[in-house]
Image 1 (tube, rainbow, N blue to C red):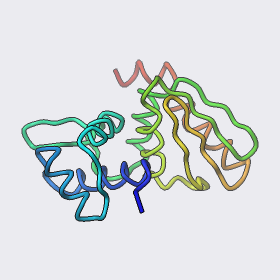
Image 2 (cartoon, one colour; image 1 turned 135 degrees about the horizontal axis):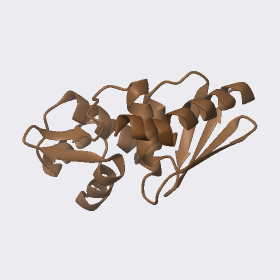
Image 3 (tube, helix red, strand yellow; image 1 turned 135 degrees about the vertical axis):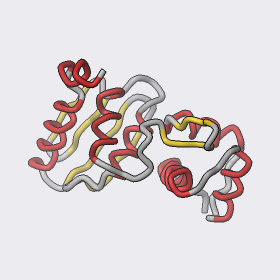
Length: 155
């Protein structure tokens, strides 16, 4: 069975956080060892969507945080969140084109209380939460993280 995009993105993020990888070929080989087969073109798109950077030490996540953390989610929200809406226990997040997956993966990795899962498109993320109050808390947190005052303070 083929891995979904979200599963592939999670595996890539874990591999980059846990090992020094210097080429797409190395990353492709590590993914294959986990049973995830992918083409170079797909892997290249995945790396771009995740915001992965390549330097002398190999690949790294753009926020510089190899492990999931609330600070990493806040930093990504500050950079990518263009809009947020609550609809009952669902939250809809809007991003620039091509950036939704990066935000969804970081949200999934954050283990935020009440978040059941995410579905990412090109510029929109649907977040399912357990309750409307969990959704309200997510909206509040991401809105605060992405606020213009906070952007100026951290620039």
